Length: 560
Image (cartoon, rainbow, N blue to C red; front, side):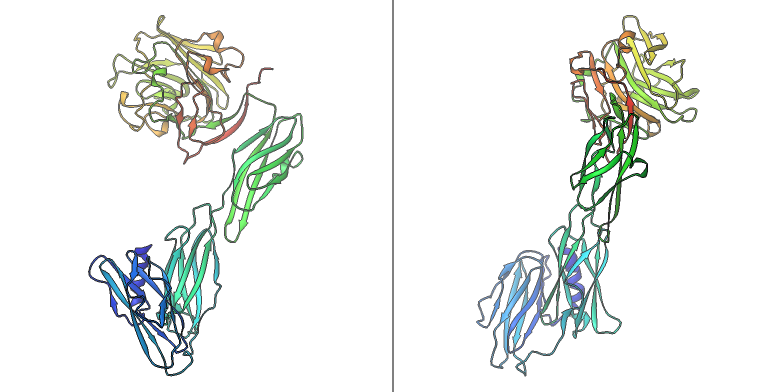
């Protein structure tokens, strides 16, 4: 802001009052505006603005007994008041030297005139001294009624909050030539708090006018969760929110028979939900509207339904996740550099869109090493293709394990489990606990889940890392929802896979020593992390700047 003000000051100095003294050719710079104060014989207070590249000092503040400065040192942008005593009509002159570094400038104060009254001049605000500015920014105009030439007025901006968001543009006369119009530009306020600046306008005689500008904060209005659930018995539902503005809360017309707003404040909305025997869904809209903050609306869903094991899942369309450190926090749990000889991989998937023939949709894995994916050239987009490690890790070594004979259905939740036994060298694929494919795999190479070089998104084989909903490039995302992603370090039996509610949860996962990674992906937030519930601490990370859409579901009935 200091450099910006120097540019503004330089533009006005060409029209300012007399300029005795000035900066040197060094990088240090100092100027006072106006450089001459002309006081009447009755005395009074007169002001100057100091513009400097550093802290300044007034070297001869005590040299005169009839004029006194309000301060003798300070910083760039200070407004200094000189109090001038009345005199008997004689002309008196004082010179004060301001210094910063190697630069200095002189202020001349002249007291005395031909009359005992100050010259008749007008210098007053025609517009408000307090201006409220909108969040979106734009332009404000300060109007000054004055007999001084509009070119002789000197504006300065000092910031209380933020810096550089309010800048002086130009001064023009009004259409009648009676008032001066000073234009200031404002940038948009992207912070969640108001910000304040003070404009000081000096006349050629050192008189000052002040205008306070307060720019309204960026309205924040949202709930902690995009979907809120309550069971069929209803009751009060408290929804945490974040808000910095006044707002209204309204219920969608189709839900007013069972859903209403009981109370609200800046931290929460309390809803009243009537009981019912059927699932019901409604929306609550939070809205703010003002001339300063503009219009802001946020809508979240309310779901009244029977309890389920999984109630929210992320939509993976053009989304992805990767090791969150960026390395695994505990690579040894995933087999470290040796990899896993025996394993089971599981995922609960729902494909919403059938991609074009030849497209790929990734569940999880490592490009060129191990991938659970659907589709490929000549493979239907809803058929499984398993990429297995080959005889080496050089290009062209990948082994492809056929395709599952059974296609997964669109918009249908399917539990996918793939097991491998190193002793039998057998790969088995299960859909919803039923075997759909099995084959022998003769190259008994371990799967090395612990590759973590996620910054190398495109490259060959071992330079790639573990991804969810991503492989090779961003076009290979999963076109729908996924949750309950698991890796075990042993082959699970079919009975284990078909066990009650196994598709929807692993109870007491930290007690399962062979469960090496477990991402439930049901948190219904955008914290940037999918927690590893296995207890091994290998969380997944995702980009919060492109937040997930959370989809309400009812998967699995809790055990009684």
